[in-house]
Length: 261
View 1 (cartoon, helix red, strand yellow):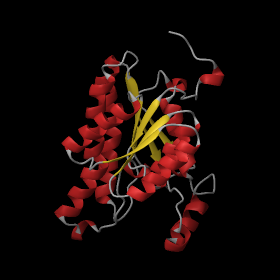
View 2: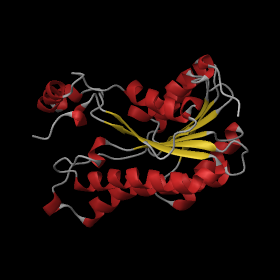
View 3: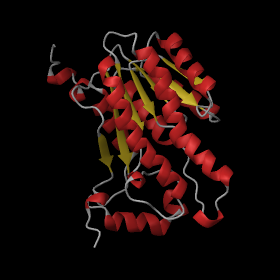
């Protein structure tokens, strides 16, 4: 195989990327960052239509192609439609970032079946459905493709009031490894990124004690930014990670490196 030059390792010129849950937050940051690296981007959203249009406008301002696509990725037919629409709009799909998710709070004893199902479906089932759909597309491409699933450090280290979210993200970590095992023969790489606490507008006001505790606990002493997660996705989707599959990359400022006692 031809090894890319160092200058080309993180270039996505001529490549296409589908980012789920890209209307706002981490997903929007990932979509914009791939566009900055030269990619054309399919911006998926479920309910954030206006925000997704703004992300598309920002990408187009960079001279890249972009399209906003609505779908409920917890439904098989909708996930398949999203993949097909992305490929039709952009010509092919080289990279998928499975980012769509929810982060609600619920006490284990009081959690309803509906709350459990919603979080598992949105954070885990959607990863399965989108991966399955795009694998069928990538198998037809000589050079396969790359899938990056957004997990969480809570898939390894549980947090209170998040038993449904903890379980879903732990599932994402194992599903990533299982998908890498089965799809490698098609030159489809599957990896995950596990963020820690990521900054969003208003988080300091909504959860001041949590933000302060994080800053005191994290070895790198700050919250993460969407670009921190996006750059990890760029690496794992790029030729720089061409012999990496089934891996999980923590992006947490070192929080999980601290001793448990």
